[in-house]
Length: 488
Image (cartoon, rainbow, N blue to C red; front, side, top):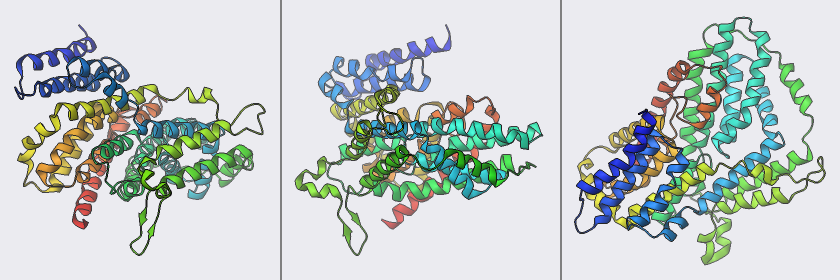
């Protein structure tokens, strides 16, 4: 029996053993049943004997059959409003890619940072970071991957030494992947894990006003920027500062810019829609500047302001692009459904499964049962708890999808907050950020896998860069959490 089949059987076998021999609370059998469901799903997510999306369908069957939640409840949890925020972000990315706006952004940044190897690395990373702040990190790398490969092909003639070119290729491709991952940490819409956290927090605390698009950036953006430059210096030290000599004339990028020509009509419209969407995200909730408060547009709707969520601008932008006609290609609009067909259904099912697991925690009472059993952590300094939490989550994220990881850990952390006597955000935000720290293994994140598929880098290159990058991220998140707690 091969390993995949063994893991396929172990998932349900572990669940059956738990149901047969465990009894967490005789008065509430749903507790044990929910643990069995969680172990089965977690095992398959971590070992992947079947596609992650296939595993994500299990809650629809298991939760009703085991008497934890009704099928209508479970099915409804799969279509959370955060799903439409995710879909809208992808559609914006498809439009940017379709009309080559990302290439123009890349060339402008490369012109700004220079043409030396370290400058080109910084330019690629800044481009990837900036775009990934607003759209999926996977979509960002997919958009920029071909442009970076073309750039590497162009500079081959400037590098007669094959070893130098291999090191430069490793630096640029790894930098592209890592900076997309880091950029996704900066905003709520940058990566699915952030949106999952946001949705889960709002469901748990519907009246809370301490987390929105701007509040997240107060956490995420400083950490992401510091981590970006930490990763840049790691890559520069490992790959660039080893005798690479490359002098590309500035005119090379100027020629590329001239080839692109002036902004097309389509690019102008997409830029405007993209900018308007970002502004609507920023200005949805009230922003308190201390001396005065800037009221967000959601407040215009009075008592219905809670209905106004970030999914609305994302979907509205997509609708505008679907309806706006192109001038250069008669008979088509800026966005067509054939582009929308690329939306990753597997990630949407992963989202839904996480929401279903959260529903199962709530309906079974597992949250309340778990909370007092975490009291042993009381008395430990918060930085120690956060550091240990980040280490564990980072290790898990190297082997399992970060979406699956954060879906499993969030309900547990919500139960931990009360015994520790801390605000839930002091655990949830560091955990969410740490779930993005998959830098070591080529399969840890989609950006890693995409650049590794180029066959221009070796796994050992990613190991060398990924271990210090993971450590830098863990330390920065722990430090930020400590400062946040001290300033509260």
